Length: 228
Image (cartoon, rainbow, N blue to C red; front, top):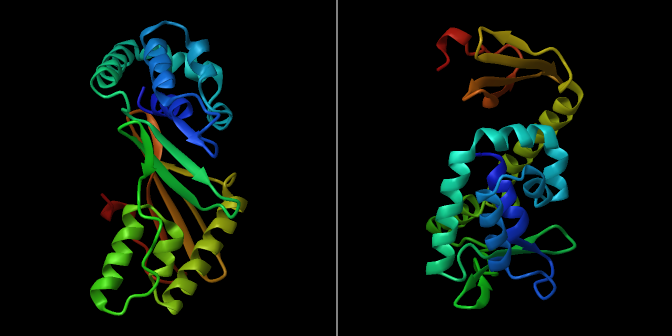
């Protein structure tokens, strides 16, 4: 249950905002292990967050639940082992501020501790400091810090490209998707002098994004035959 079980775990283990009113993550993890080992998809579905339930219907969840009994049993056993050897296993929390920024916390020896330093490198006096700042942003998956590490011209250009791509995608998401063979598809559109291509491939029965091309109209496109 490679897609749904992580969502189930996050729903019960991740606290958001208030740590004092949320139940201990150990309790949630124990409940998850019990649910994984059981045969009640409705109980498991109830543990998903509201956002997760919006993304997957109960019927889809139920079908995948029934098809992954062996994997669920294995995950339940591993989770129980972790809880026996480490009472804090997997306990994490996410504090979210009003401006959208977040701070990660991790449970360590019975106390909540910062998962990363609150301070960030705001200036880079030397090239190596700039690379470290960039590496920190990539490691933290922090888009704002990533953009802040770029030069103004590169950041502004990238932001324009991303904004154009997002706006076009919203308009074209219901557009024609060309299916090529049985395991490849492509959504393509031109807008404001730019050509956008989203390449999809079928992997383990699921369609996933394999590549994204953004380039000026007129530049030679990578032909399908040349793509891996």
